[in-house]
Length: 386
Ligand SMILES: Cc1cc2nc3c(=O)[nH]c(=O)nc-3n(C[C@H](O)[C@H](O)[C@H](O)COP(=O)(O)O)c2cc1C
Image 1: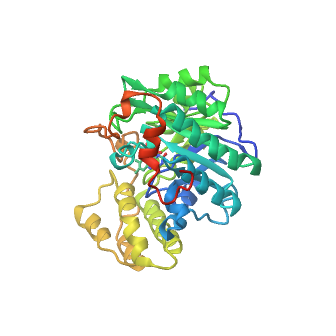
Image 2: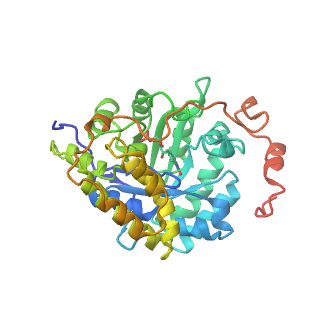
Image 3: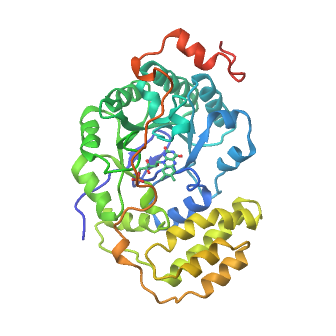
């Protein structure tokens, strides 16, 4: 299938993303080795690192600092920060700017995980308009003078009765964000059901800044269809590329009007697995054990749908070195074709939330009183503003 739908370059101020196809940040997934694999297949897009907790960055937590690493080949370094306390997110942004750690900062207001929303973070935060604005304002004030663009990634809201995306996107625009990404689900939807693309279209109508659409792009055709249906300026891909970094190549082809698709054989997937193991070894500074443990989830995704027995899958879970991984890959029947039957099927997380966890009384008001702020932040040893 060829596409008459085009994506125009996306101007972020200090950089033009030629083809606004975005690797959506995924914790535990989008470290530089995975980004590199996606980039090698994909267009000149935007490949975002996984979320870094502002608090961990300010504390110089070594694990957080590792996640902030970029490969020298990454000419445009895109980092995502997460935090609730405006003062701490501001401190983290200051570190990013002063230490030249990234060229772009995305802010995470989409996370639905209970341990995050319970503290008022992620997708819970935009409910509090003033707190949300404060976080954006502080980060943009730090990043903008350095020429670093800030974008915001949001969800539709907490649930259908408590939507936030119209206000949140408008506030992001007012505070100087260069783009907004909408994952068109509520927190309550978690990863269940389908991203409601018409809400992406609604934001496109409302905003002057570009809207990047997100949710349920499993194939190149889905990416084209999202742009066609919503008019969004770019598309962000999360779960669809888990175990399929070549999806970015398919999407590049589709927007270039080509019907060529990459459907690797088992042998070719095996080669990617080995390369992924090698890149992860570099990421973990030579610690092969950590690398192959990190690789496990990817292997499960890579092999999804292939007629590979449980014994082989279990053997990968026991690998302790790159040589072990190579030995397992060497046993593959290289000619086995890509399982087309699963190509357009959801992968990774797919369920609804059991319950949305929020701070006590969070939904009572869209604003925070001074007392509520004090309750939340005053005892914070990292926050000198109280
Ligand atoms: C394992 C996993 C980790 C994620 N981590 C992040 C994250 O760190 N920051 C973020 O903004 N979104 C995160 N997300 C959400 C994705 O970026 C994306 O918005 C969501 O998966 C919907 O897109 P999709 O349907 O293409 O997967 C994560 C999603 C998954 C499945």
